[in-house]
Image (tube, rainbow, N blue to C red; front, side):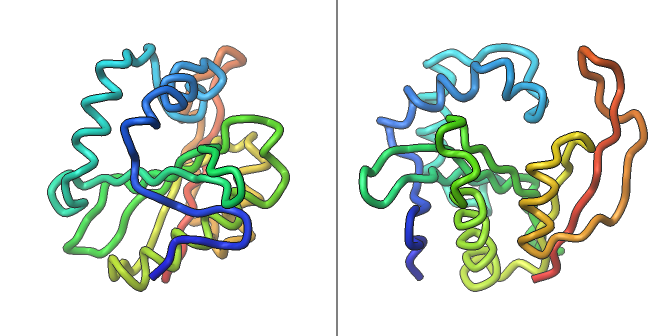
Length: 173
């Protein structure tokens, strides 16, 4: 199975990805949606890249880089986490970091490729995610990809603006 669409491809993490991941992971604007509280060092990210060589069945997680087809530019990442082989499900997170690459269908195409990979290669039964209630772009993205709201955690996430809800979404594959 090819993890390539018309505009982007999904690929394994490579050592050259440490620098873009360093920018992404250390952007406080991303922390609000990722649950991160502290910066990552380059050393931590180098170790993370090294650990990506292991199978998802060992690590229970997988990161794929979203790369443009023409320029081969890393523009974001997709994460599978809390992989549960017994129940055949995983959480999914997505980041398209640069605002210049947003609203161009990149995340939609990447999520579609990931869904096909999860179903056809990993044999998953479902994907799930949690999205901040005010993140209308992410809620629309997951809804377009066939995820449905299955619950809401009230006042679940603290932000500098106060508490907000987290919307739980699932997609049966």
